[in-house]
Amino acid sequence: MTRNLKALADNQFDVLVIGGGILGAGIARDAALRGLKVALVDKADFASGTSSRSTKLIHGGFRYLEQGAFGLVAESCRERAILQRNAPHLVKPVPFLFAVYEGDVRPLWKMRFGMTLYDWLALYRNTASHQTLSVAATLMKEPHLRRAGLRGAVQFYDCQEDDARFCLDNILHAAELGAVCANYCEVTGLVRQGDRVVAAKTADFDIRANWLVNATGPWINRLSPQVRLSPTKGVHLLLAHRSERGIFWQARDGRLVFVVPWFDCTILGATDTDFTGDAAEAHADECDREYLLSEFSRTFPGIQPEVITTFAGVRPLLHSGANPSARSREHRIIREGANFFSVAGGKYTTYRAIAAEVIAEFHPGKSVTAHTPLPSYRPPLTGMKVADLPEVYESDIRHAVEYEMAQTLSDVMRRRTSLALSKHGSREVAERVAQVMFAGEAERRKQVAEYLAERDRGTL
Image 1 (cartoon, rainbow, N blue to C red):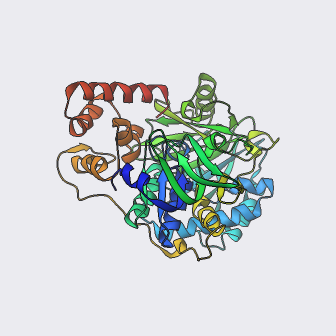
Image 2: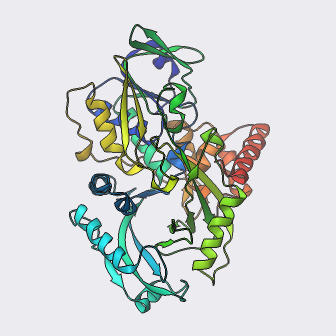
């Protein structure tokens, strides 16, 4: 995949997808698989917004059962099974414990009932059905849990994925099928004729298309000001401690908190608070850190948490007056005029189904993504090994620059690899990667400084 801006300017496309997050990636891939002439652009790097700052789970969303969103849970469980089948190199099962303590608003009997319903809505296609564990069995599996007040746990399975890599592989597949894709290509406005949009404007040229889709997530209002969102911020902390399984528990305020294993570290999350402002600048503030670390220390009193870095994503949720944790994860497709669509809401797990629904708005063909494997695009491993866990070689870095449109050091450290979200995101490793990417010493120093500043600020 090369960054061919001339092809964007010189062609008339069937579909232009604006936004290179997971929804835009899925829409572009679905359209390309149907034989349509596709263009996809993003104002920054692919997956640089919410789609690289998620909890990194492909999950059924058991907590949405409390909201009565049974259809969403059933769809999510179905999509989880499809993605696990079609992308086994990226979507992998992870065991979870839901630890229950005395006084929790969700007692053990309620969790058993909810997980039985969860298995049923998944049509028992999960890795394994849930199990209820005694206090002793719970502590055997996770001896670091606080013992005081522990009533037991429910064990269940969901799936984990590398969200940025998953998004990028969807785009790479679309490009392999003929889509013209470009990052760092911002759409600044629309060219209209009557009720039709005939082109999207960039700083240097117009992109002409018969159909246009605004899939820009929390930035949707830049092109579709009438769409109403109620965004929330989800903060995650990357801890040096390594967890062997995912663990959920109920915070003192009734919200759910979790840890999830991630390479050689653990992700602790997540907050769910109202957000205003530019989603690119979302980050963990002191209140976010204190809240999560307090809950971690209360539940794992024997572990001293060491924060390596933080990241925060903005969920582009549909407008609702509900409190942030109770807002719907449903989606909506809004038609604006004859040929312009905006996609609002949704969740990562259901991106494939949403993409198929978007294309169905203007194309009669049937989506084939449910039965089409997602290829792996990792190159043969050659050259110096940059880091052990996750394993990254010089070949990965060169491939990212030559075939995956990586423009900056942060693109490689954070989204083409997971080095930034590991114990190998240090200056030393960053300098090694920059040595492979950039010829000039001044540019290498500049890129390393910018990457470290973003990592320290938590805006990678």
